[in-house]
Length: 204
Figure 1 (cartoon, rainbow, N blue to C red):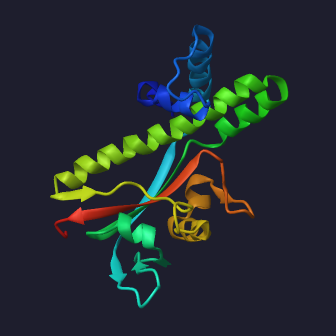
Figure 2 (cartoon, one colour; figure 1 turned 135 degrees about the horizontal axis):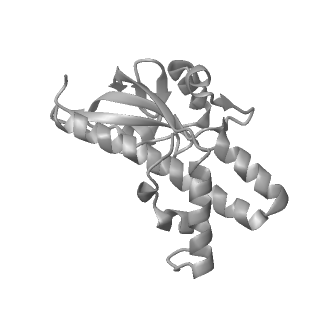
């Protein structure tokens, strides 16, 4: 399934390439568009999600708050701040599939400059896909009198990467999305995302 390339933020690609605030030359701009088109023929965007009630236990002394996400518990000050005022959470995983990794590996052997741009473009594509899903959810929940908090992923702040294992289990990510974890808790395909999204407002 191809993506709408108009949703992919070109400035984000430039940021990943280290071109902060700089306009690309004509050749680089054209190569970015070529890479996006080439990726778009290979990607297979998919996502899964589940919603759970959220309960937060106040910490004792110097402990971080304990968050019960309905399917596993987390001690995290940073995630607690992100979820302040929420009564429910949405657990989310998305990927653009193995095609992007395949292309990048192929060009790493033959044309490294293109591989670098493909890497940046693929990172912007998974972000655009997540934003597209997020935007649809915002509208859906707004109609119910609720608001969504920003996505918060394992590895941010003190929300340990170790919790990727819980996402894998709860969302059946290997079975449903073909995502697996390395020994270092990184996801394969590499252009994949997991996140907690807080739901605030009227309790349904």
